[in-house]
Image (tube, rainbow, N blue to C red; front, top):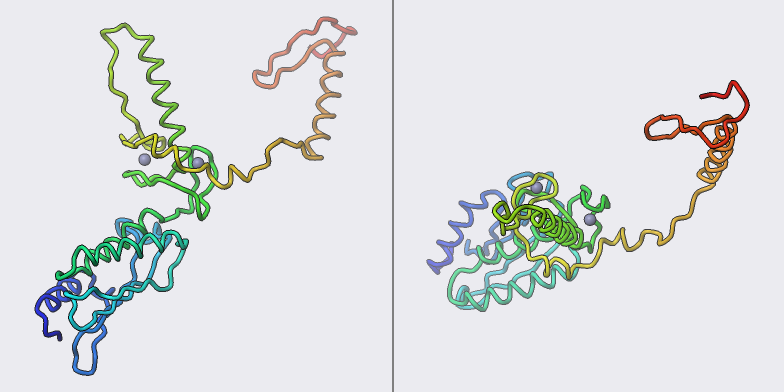
Length: 260
Ligand SMILES: [Zn+2]
Ligand SMILES: [Zn+2]
């Protein structure tokens, strides 16, 4: 299989972990010269939550692991070039760091970690109610909830401010110093560096949303109807308030038999 015991052991271990997700390429003498595996984000086996993937193609040159392997990322899905560049860079660093020792498992980990961070979900951010677009910076909490990093920063800042305001209202003996941030969806405790989150740009959909509100034709017609209804009710002696259905008497109770 291979004349270097380190490589034999490494391939055995990889086969045991990846099983049929791993393809080992051998030469005509049966010596392993490379391997291929498709990498997905960590999603606790929930394949529905895997939105990105990439094929990892590793060539083992003669002399590996004393020589670095040649690594190629193929058929990326849902990943932008900057992520692929980051992965490439981190793989090169790992290969340097691990020169002389098996490094393939480390490489797979680097790819998996980056994919997990770039795994763009198709749900909405429950803070701004916009979805996630490619290029959006988002955060996946330990409880597997997704928020735009920008939105989460705003939410955490606001929750801490409200917490402090509520604390200030309490007598000193009831006050607690410690603020615990919680997930806006499931209230699981979360911990983030707000300063770092705040460096993320606002969601793309928010930036692209129209700046000013323009009522549609339909809305204009409705406004006219409502204005006419308002005058009608006023003339009849009372205004019906939308929210509590109360009849509000107007100043000039009009003709008798008004609809009170
Ligand atoms: Zn958002
Ligand atoms: Zn949560």
